[in-house]
Image (tube, rainbow, N blue to C red; front, side, top):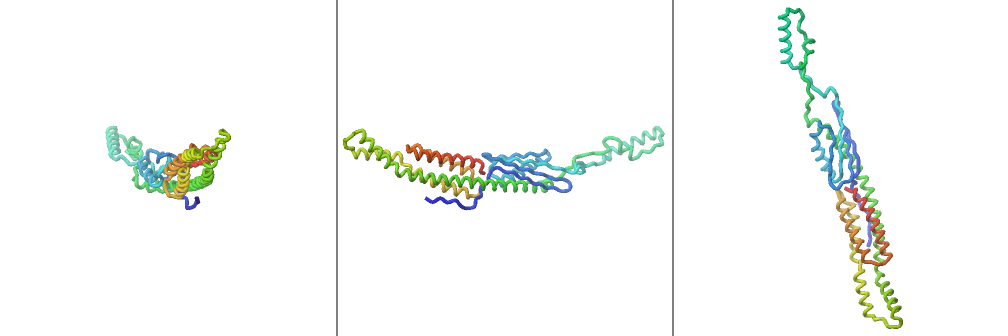
Length: 301
């Protein structure tokens, strides 16, 4: 059975990092996104309370492009101090201060005039508020930084995915070669068992003639119990399927994980059916490679 490895790999790792910047004269944003492997899509946004209103938009943006992984988003920003607050005169309060000062001046017959410097020295003459900004205008500055960081993260995840796929394909080729050896060896097992059984019976019975019909029955029972043809065929099929999945686009990690479980089930069945030392050693080799593949699959989206 021919096994080929080819096609354009499109799988992604769940590990990556991205950074994006965006800003204008008043404010600037730096967005960092880190991701590691996770069973689901777990997104954590770490930003100041002032930016908490954008969490849902950021989550939606990430979910539209990433299907799995623990994703942490860090947002930092700098803002011009001149833009932090708005100062407005409290004209009503100023008028009251002015009128009160005029009364004092007239009552005490003072010559000093009520001037601006004096009026502005009193409390509550100015109303100082944090500048309120339209959230949409802030998002127009923040969004490009998020997208830039996300693009970089995805690019890194794809590059890592290529490495993972090549390693898995290399190991699956090794498994294919070992399965071929198991298939070749299994074709001789019944014949070898017949010779051993025949010689053992002759040794025990000395010159007594061997009952060929009884021997044939024993061989038939043994052949049925030790038959691993179905398991071998399914393993070949799983290997081809593995190669096919690695060439798919999108999130295939769970699909690969399930397939590796199925391959483990088949090779374990072969191990339990066969008492041949060589096949037992081949089974160990296959299980070793499958375990290494399983570890790699845990990091595939």
